Length: 285
Image (cartoon, rainbow, N blue to C red; front, side, top):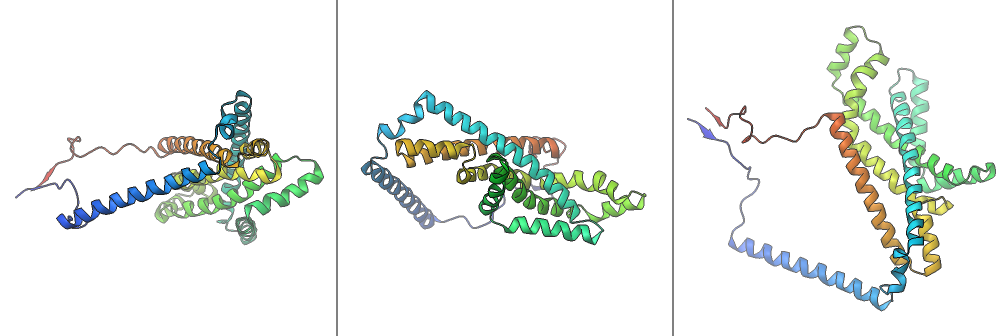
């Protein structure tokens, strides 16, 4: 006797009439509460003269639009350098933590744990003090700090991804005579990268957002340009909102790029529905 394939799985009992009424009431009250809070915020901003045209005029003035565009390019350049350096740092120290040689493991462990533990802002400021004495400018301390911190986080990601490869495949590679370096390069890393790609994308987004810390050492970027704008026009709130929107756009673009790369790296394809796949039987005997 054949049984039809269920189109959906019931995880809980369907709500009854009274429960549906309660859900609608709660939904309506939630919407009213959100609208009331937003209205209160807008009213407060209006009372504080934060919504006047003078506060926002700067953001549709060509001269300042070009300054923001320049700051965005600086932010992207710093992010690219930081992400590239962090990936290399993470790969080197992540694999070093898996070394058969104890001194190498302990050195890698010490470096990774130290830079993961130090607050990023303090790390950037410490590097900046040294860079100030050696005339390295302000971009180098920011990039170095981002590489050290995000690279340390990625080192743990790489280590965990490599360890996630099934042990049987590693043992099979050793059984056919491959050395550890070849096993790492041919068997473990290709599969680990597929496993780690979502975490790597997430950390790249973090690195992009952390470029905003360059504000504290006056490094070029969006936040430094924003600092000059609100000091000139006394529009901190408007500037903060505009910068937030720009960072959100950049992060969304980076996330989309990461997902595109993930799709091509992992070979992921959209799941084909069972109804549209004639090779999958819909009924089981």
